[in-house]
Each structure stands twice: as C-alpha cells, then as structure tokens.
Length: 155
Image 1 (cartoon, rainbow, N blue to C red):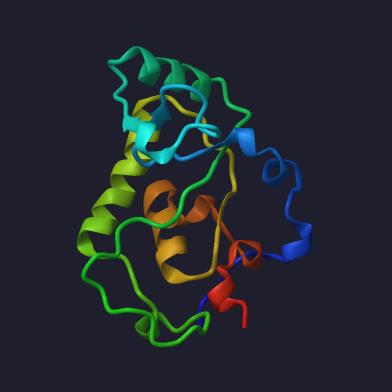
Image 2 (cartoon, one colour):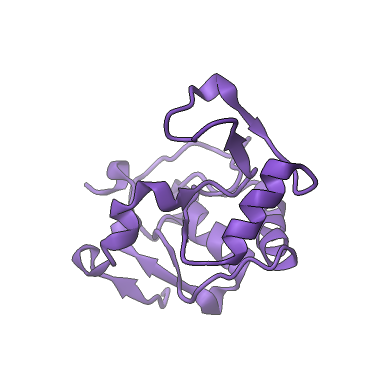
C-alpha cells in the first residue's frame, strides 16, 4: 500500500494556474526570440546558460516567485498505458532508464544553477509524473495531488 499526501483538486492554490506568464518549461530551458506566448513554435530554440538569453532566464529563475511546470521525464520505449487506474504501476507507461536519468539531471541542474524550489513540489498521482518529481527533488519534498491528474485518468 502506498502512503501519499494528497491535495483535493479544489484546494490547490489558484494564482499560479491563472498566471500563465509565470509558467516556465525548464526541461530544456527553451526560450523564444521574442515572447514565448506569441512566438510560433518554429521560432523557439534551445538556449544555454552561456548565452545572453539563457543567462537572463537563469537570473530571473534565481529570484524565485515563479511556478516551474513540466510534464514527466522520458518514457520512450516503455509499453503504452493498459489501464487508467491510479496505483496500477504495471498498467501505466513508466519512465524509461533514460527518463530516470533525465529526472536526476533536471533536479541536479536546478540545484547547480541555484534556482530555489519551494516545498512541497506538487506532482500528479500517475507514476511517471510522481517518479519524475521524486527522483528530481527527493520523495520527502514531493506531495501528490489529484489536481494534476491528466484527463484520461479522470474517469
């Protein structure tokens, strides 16, 4: 039996979800040449911390006060979902070995860059999401919430 802390969907903080300009996709630190919200996808390109745009993003992230939002790490090569039941790990598409490594690198990169992460880190109850968060930030820092459940699991 899994022991997990859960937030009911209606108890999640509303402000971060309403402020789309504060949602950042940190997996690859992708930055648009203009504003991310108005730039077509083909104008996006990766930026490193050695480039002006990358340095600017890291400096902003270090000031905190933002919500970092991303999906789970890599699941390539893993079997597709066979069930949509929470707690059925064998029936879910899980992280690949590369995904587990990727999750470790995400957490380490954020720590190395000095980007503050507030506790608790919220994660959905599907194993690939919660595993990504727990590997990246440590299971003690992660709180599982049904409010981050994908529609296909919602029943």
